[in-house]
Amino acid sequence: MNTRITQLFGIKYPIIQGGMIWCSGWELASAVSNAGGLGLIGSGSMYPDILEEQIKKCKAATDKPFGVNVPLLFPDRKEVFDLLIREKISIVFTSAGNPATWTSYQKEHGITVVHVVASVKSALKCQDSGVDAIVAEGFEAGGHNGKEETTTLTLIPLIRKAVSLPLIAAGGIATGRGMLAAFVLGAEGVQIGTRFVVSEESSAHPEFKRKIIESGDGDTFLAMKKVVPVRLLKNKFLDAVRLMEDQGASAEELKGLLGKGRAKKGMFEGEMEEGELEIGQASALINGIKPAGKIIEEIIHEFNEAKKELNEIR
Ligand SMILES: Cc1cc2nc3c(=O)[nH]c(=O)nc-3n(C[C@H](O)[C@H](O)[C@H](O)COP(=O)(O)O)c2cc1C
Image 1 (cartoon, rainbow, N blue to C red):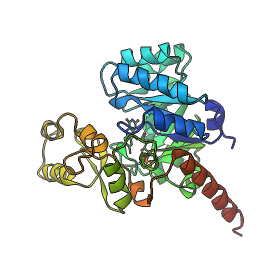
Image 2: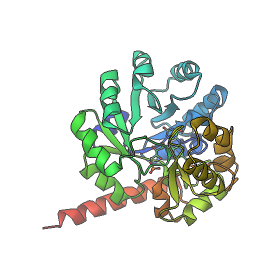
Image 3: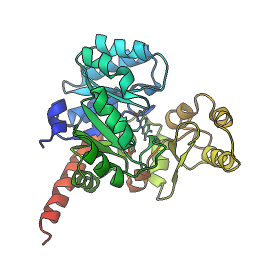
């Protein structure tokens, strides 16, 4: 396939595996890159020494392009960017912050910078900051989300109209049909998270994968809007959050309930009731664990079949 996204990264298919805390280490990133997509190491859950080790392992496992996702909301960002520069990482996806803060520093070092947004306002800021491409992530997505609650179906055409940068759609895309829909709306690539959490190579705990497969529509909820909005799978912890939110809890009180290490506990250590389980609405579409390469193959096959079907409409 040939789009501005395949050209920008030098990849075969315009499928990006989203950076995901506790789920996307070198095994998943290298498997996606080896299958023709773009794998991203999710650095959000890694101290710099762990990230360095993950990068070295990823380099050993693939000779294809891969990148690193850097959420900007955590401290020590300078240390992380300097590590990426030392390791000659040429593709970085930043998220959860202002693209104006770190883009020029990365560009000075020859890095291709992509930033994740959930609104037209943030997309325009990306354009002014000199990023190379945008990920537009809608309300359906797993993980941290925009306060605006704009769905992918609405967000992609809005951003397509507002900015001329290469555009990657994210949020609710787990199939070839979903990918085709995003392309019809104006995207030139897709970023997929939830589907890859349930891959063989993801570092998510097996219990978390099992719970995702069992889930159906209505089983996720966008919570913590007073802190940072995050889409979670329903469990005891989410019930507690929703109860506190209904009772008008403050951001400080919610942060207290969240505490430290709750995401690790849920997604990585398999504590299904007290852990924080970040996942997107697309969890309802997933019914099995497969190798990442197989997932990409199936998405591309379905994309091509669905495109043919559309061509036959008169
Ligand atoms: C478990 C999980 C963890 C995530 N962690 C991050 C993260 O650390 N940084 C980030 O930019 N996005 C993160 N995301 C968002 C994904 O990169 C991706 O944009 C999103 O999952 C796309 O929507 P989908 O889940 O509907 O495929 C996470 C998503 C999930 C499901």
